[in-house]
Image 1 (tube, rainbow, N blue to C red):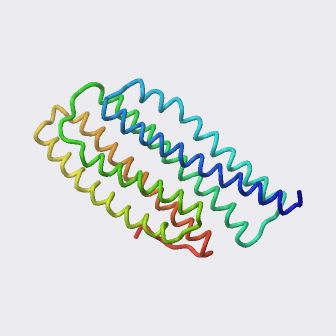
Image 2 (cartoon, rainbow, N blue to C red):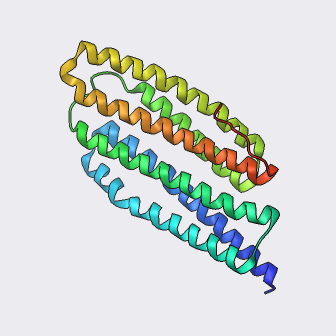
Image 3 (cartoon, rainbow, N blue to C red):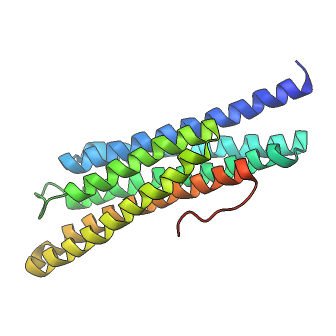
Length: 219
């Protein structure tokens, strides 16, 4: 195998690790919402325990990226690809952390019935899930059209977040004895909103990878 072939193989491994971490974060977030729906304490604890996998994959990505830079001294697009991989890994690991935070909120809520509908929470999650799916495709395909679509979807999450927090504040005024649960549901909304922001960060890095220029898609 030539030096370039070996290098391309290692770049492909780096790419696969990014996708692996993305799929893990996506699955963790999905599981956290299922646990919330069912007030499932055991599932929530499992999500917390398994978060170590996200940390391990991110470390593997960083180690491989550093090794590639040290061995190959890449320039131009190849260097951007490696730098972007490190940045995307950090965003994906953070999304997995938000799944853990939702699991912790579920544990704090306990077995109590929800004080109000959590339909908007599900709507926020559904959009965020679509964003993660799309961003992994955009990364794999280096597709800026898909990356731009992610920023548009993020606007929907932001709108739902504002609406839901307003509703929860109204509920807390009417049912002050439920302030503990209302606070945790507010946190869940915030974690989903932040997860969507991190997906948008990834889409910005895809633009940088393909175009070699920074674009702020969160405006």
